[in-house]
Image (cartoon, rainbow, N blue to C red; front, side, top):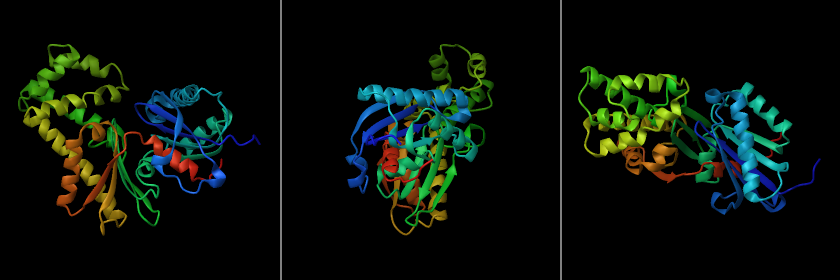
Length: 322
């Protein structure tokens, strides 16, 4: 067994990027892990590590690069850390987690590895007890809740074909569909039509077909259109506003469902939000909370720009080994 390094590694891997943070911890004297008190000294980034979106070879390669970059940022040689927590989108099944653990063994990543639901660190980044509801809306969407008894439940997270309601992807897809319906004369006119054509540097809606269908794995490209939809909605376009209204309704429904399933309606619910849509569109986030309030669910909200902070909290408090 290698000597203790006092190093802790947290990795948050999603559909757009992989983020790795390196921190130090004096474990014998460390009893609680408060997110704001964790000091990181190495941070690394790489591309997507969602195995269902990019495949294992690319995902594991990006995991490795993020770790390498974190050690390079810390300006220390890469070594086996004492503890690590990996929160990876698309790795919820046991078969996927086993392959990730095998990779961690092969590269001698850590002595103690914890692999968790990709939404769980959001809760621990917001509060050290990990109680509340995490709501994610970025490229994809999902909600995860954990009550005071430690019971957890998920809602959403079904991916682009079956779900991702309220996500940047579905917001953008709804806008693209509104554009082609308007072009056909089947739907109302909308500023989205001209703005999306200008964005892609084209003059007709039919030119969207080769752009959008050439790459079968273009979720990120499509989701990146969401800020434009918000901009058009802000100018008063009713079609864009309806798209965003439906998106906020879908997200509120996820939270509402978890509050009921986990029996969390007796007091204000701690809501932790992350993902590009919730982080960069505060008015939209407030609309989700307003819709929850109209159903009797009061929330205290905390934005979590970097949910990877929660992976460090989990790693520091974990005794799980592989």
